[in-house]
Image (cartoon, rainbow, N blue to C red; front, top):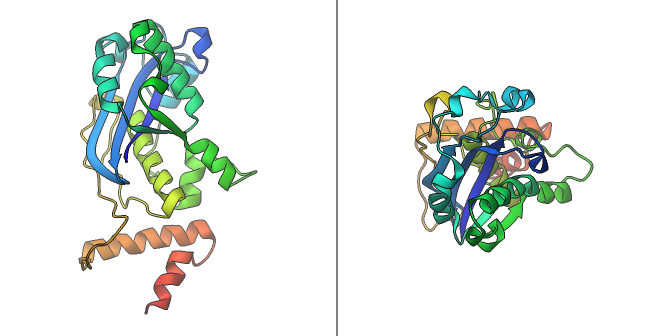
Length: 239
């Protein structure tokens, strides 16, 4: 199955008040493995960004003046996501903004549902962890996903973190490293995506660096579990 983990940034919270997209970011997975392909663009919204949104994203109005409009990128964006399952945290928010942009671009583009199916990880998290905080940051902490590189909300880093959270929620498998850093000043980020293995057709021996990374991940899981995690206990039974 081809999956696209998607995140957006916007000028404000209410699409009905005319707020617009200022960033779209996607990372691709196939059969639960990151492929290394991503799509990311900033957008000129033709309006000012709310102060609250600036504080969250760190994106300033001036930075977007020379960026493309949604109409300029709609074809390549739809080509990237076409036929995939979109994985989005609080999907109603992002899809609402994307549908509004598609409507402005032209009726023939339809809606996101005409191009993809959508899986909402916020709905999934609320079912698995009822009564608990289920923001992306809260889920990273609960599942032992390292989000220390997330100083501000940025589409690409949030999409990568959400990919790790999704894999952790659905199988306990998480990516060992973010693999990139990005900021608005850097423009479209170039991503080196680590591979997640969900099956082992043959036994591979880990090198010293991989063993150290494995231990760091187990330490993070132990911390989030408040003691020895199930992964640590399983490992101990094998020694």
